[in-house]
Length: 170
Image 1 (cartoon, rainbow, N blue to C red):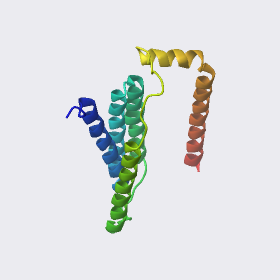
Image 2: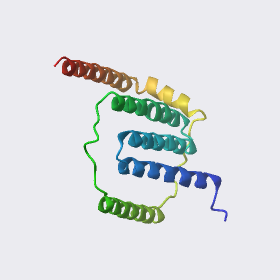
Image 3: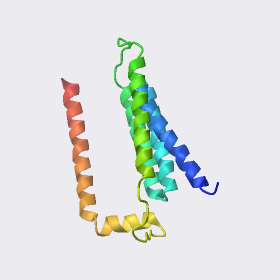
């Protein structure tokens, strides 16, 4: 079967890992398990970016999302109080509806992909080093939006610290 290539197999494996991690994330009841499955989804998404030859985006995905955000969420969970007062009954109906919805979504996506016109409209000429190209674009043509985003994130960080201190004093 000439259609079955290594890239296609890797794509389906990463896609199944991403979907599985996302389903586990919404299915688990313990928050720590949710964060671990979310980190698993982020790592699998980084692998998918590597397949797309977007190494910089894959590196940022793994470094920022799988690393920093997941660790931040785990620290947030560890530093807050949790009680086991909320015992939930079996969610068989909820899980059945979720599975049915997933199958319906898979069917619609499969139908849309099979009927899509995937002929290339032009020639894609990616740079030899896409990290260098992103850096050049970011620091030449897009330097003002980049700096505005950094100022916005700094202001949001300072505001979060101010709100946390105000709540702590009360």
